[in-house]
Image (cartoon, rainbow over all chains, first blue to last red; front, side, top):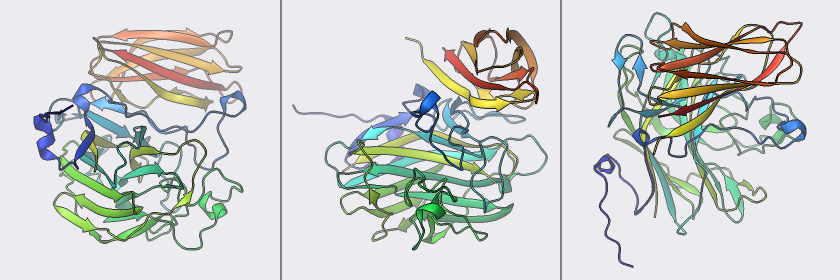
Length: 309
Length: 107
């Protein structure tokens, strides 16, 4: 069959690889992006033992970005974005994430077309809830994205995290997912022996975190300092561009692009772990946000493109 | 064809005091139904659907009771604007509850 493709106008603001697998504009619904939850497979539908309460993340919403004083922002192209939220439960950044202090949106996909490269792109924004006086930028700890990938040999999670603020002090630097040398499974699971997650799996929750923002599961991106747009008030948002490209043949990062800032990450590898049972060929893209204080914060995704080549 | 979505607003949370779900934007939907389940023993719980202009200031819209002898109750709502949340009262340190809240939306 010979195919003739006519792309939608909205794709013009993306730079997809040869094969667009998903173009998700949240004006058309949730598009399969859902809350991240653990496996309820133990007795009485309970989950496994974890220091981090993986049942506690806030529900994702289709948002018109309705603000307290500024009215609805709508989205970049239409009315709705996907809103990823937290509860007002941020704790110290050196401790494991508290119940509800993060929000996540996941789409559950699988490998298709035997690609060498996979890429996620998004137009997004973030802001805290305007439930108190002040500007509020310091209340957003981080936003992030990672792929959960398993091939015929390894499971691994290439991802990045923009550290916006720690303990109320602005940091504004990108990190990538890679486990530091010498981290043990017990370190990773905050002391739980035989924890379900091995070092390199679920860096967004596990691994010790330190005062300066370094962590067992995160390394600083070379040249990763960047001042993202945070408008002058919690009720004003600006849409920004994000792209992460990963080589799944070499199992290494390729590029991180944020706005017009391109960070070359070739040669840097995520941490490889032994494959888990029955999830060969899994590819799950996941976005998340973290609060740095006792205040809810929101990540708005106008649209997302997942492409391969 | 209409769009429908079910969100889990509260996932098996143990409560011992007044409790409210996080603010939830649902402006795309015409109607919704809250479903409140309690696992195990629990006291009579008063369930209140609340609406808001901004997700910060709240006003009561509809109410139901989840009696101690029951494990599931529903609470329909429409013309709610954009913001919704659910308030649950009746739990105390002496009589706790473990609650699971679904919100189905359609529009």
